[in-house]
Length: 467
Image (tube, rainbow, N blue to C red):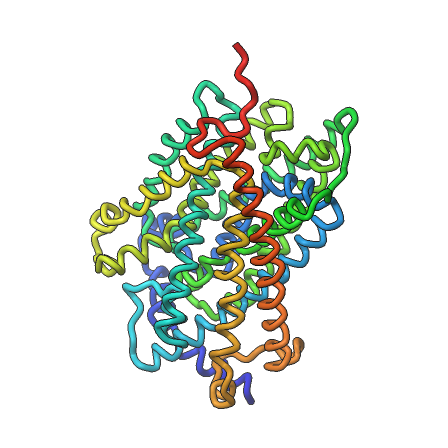
């Protein structure tokens, strides 16, 4: 009876989204082609978006993390944080459904409004939760965009070193600014599909090229050697599977958001088929050499296959920059009251100021690799692990809230008691291991990069230029 009640409530929601999906049947051939390439809202689109967004430049830094952690710990942390990330993404989806259903019962129309995570927290828990969620989410997405920009410069350098990495950052900052013209996550359909093909190619290139290359002479696999390196590596993996800061925006772009529940888990399982073989193979071949080469491409010989991987990752980083930055565009639009403006040109111009601080921060902190761990420990730990777990517990703390919940936790995991136990574990583990030890280790490592290379360094980890 309970499941029938849930289905009834959900079936009556998201009316405007479903209508929009149905309207596509009556369109012309030209507009149908445009829709096919540009306007996505299916469960498949959401899966492509999650899988494509989850593993981008971090694919190139995971072998570096394995050199810090050792092979066994690297594999175990990927599996562990992959499952934990899928659980908290599931919690976010439940909270979104709860918030949206309550609002639609009040006749709120979302046709020209994109719901975001901080608004879910505001609607369910009040302004203090909204402010905390807004701070962590925006700061994480800001630095997530910075990391993509740094990665662009780091990668292009390996096929064209005539310019230093800082100059490449200037160039790609201008290129990535064009994402202001992409209206919403509906419009990433073809980009998400292509992005996943690109990361799949790069992952298997890293795997096969490393196996063909074989072990370098005198290779050592001594990790883990220090606590600092160990927890820095672990926190980079925490960051890897914490890419669901845009979960709410992806759900809102779906015609039927209630279908999202297991999509992130399915995306994570696919991503593991890319990250585990590639990181293991590169670490097997190059071992401790990775400790001073945070970008795995730096150690592989230049070939047409490697250059293809570099170009594909550059395009993918442009896509992922858009994924990370689009929610920031929405927040800024709402702040300046431009979010419901129908003119895309006006909205694009209004969005441009968001790109400027991202550009500036990428030039100040060009530390590809170490910055991932720092962002992971200080921001990802709260944004996508601790806050969703706490929010779920507090939202459904009362018996009446649990009784009237639109979605109930699966009985397979112990229902409400099981979900509270898992949430408590997530909060304690991430607070101590991710934020505590991870924050300590990643900050020490980050400060070491600043001391070694300095802020505004022109070419981070570049080999001496041949005359």
